[in-house]
Image (cartoon, rainbow, N blue to C red; front, side, top):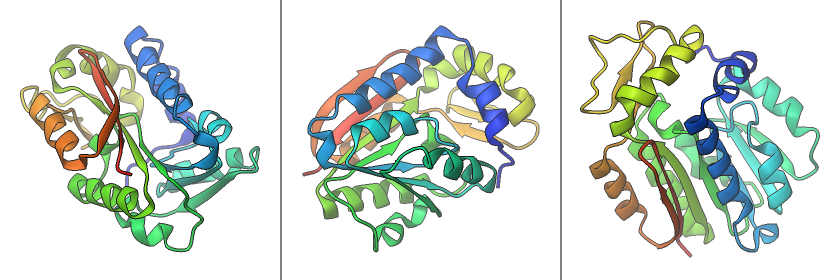
Length: 227
């Protein structure tokens, strides 16, 4: 498991003072805040980290389930969640999402997978997509997924990874594949950036009614309903 800590993530990632990156974070927050009838819905934050978007989703939702597996993040996530009365933290693997939700209060869920978490997971990303689709179908819900685009890896991506190298390791240019959208660091950290074909495949896989799509040269955000 990657040795992330909340302090490092906050310092090197969230506070990355780049206009594209800050716009990406703001756009995610705006889409969450614009979910219709949000006060009647359960927001499920997959890969919640240390609680980067807790404030936004807590104010929008009926209740929140924040799921995180990394011990370095989980401790801070639990601490931050204490500020809110409608958040429950679940320590577990999002690849087993349906099992994690089995005994929880879930009503009209909005499943969130933000900040290209799908591209950085250690496991089969298609299994996570399958679990999200099954959960949204079973409980009558929506999905919001946020991805980084392969076309932006060579420029914006390398700027980002150079900045966060103290956390992820220096870029390994021999193993990084810009055409495929694969970043690899010298410490073995990997991140997938998504091609247009990948994005279209994911959109078609979820199906449902597209509520909103945001496409920029650097990122893509999909909000779809499976109700």
